[in-house]
Image (cartoon, rainbow, N blue to C red; front, side):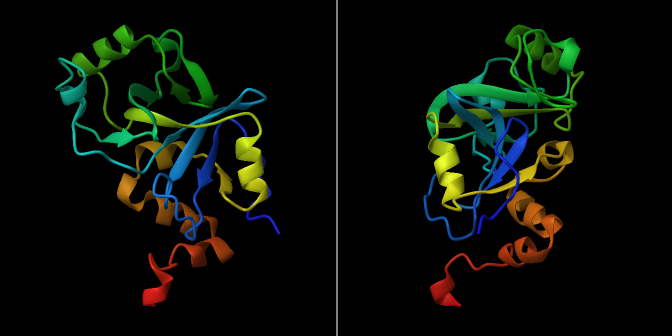
Length: 187
């Protein structure tokens, strides 16, 4: 029995089941930004890091929102999700009113001019990646729960509560999983 009937696709969330022990993905929520025959690319939405964006990129003091660990692959790279669409060139539409990447000079200008809020833009260090067929195989083995992404999950819910909030919102057996103890041996 599969944990989810939704197929992996751009704009879908991968939710780690509570039994997942891999420390890179334990209790994570990942937004798939690309999924296809060449592999998959996603960003972990609920892992904040202790540094600020200004510590990573010069002159970005105006951004006070969370900086997240997007995944274990290339943690020195910076990625961005935003709601700017046509206001920023070279973006990739992930779903309606949600975009990934784009011309970083334009993004910096928007942030520096204080025309943005962290309800419109999020930054990530690193990413989660899968080779061709790898993610599909993990899903077949009930390695992920899939659900459509909602923009409020990305921009309006604090990263620390996102995993639990989404499972509860999904209801039924998923709501029960949201209460699964961190260490079931201690229950």
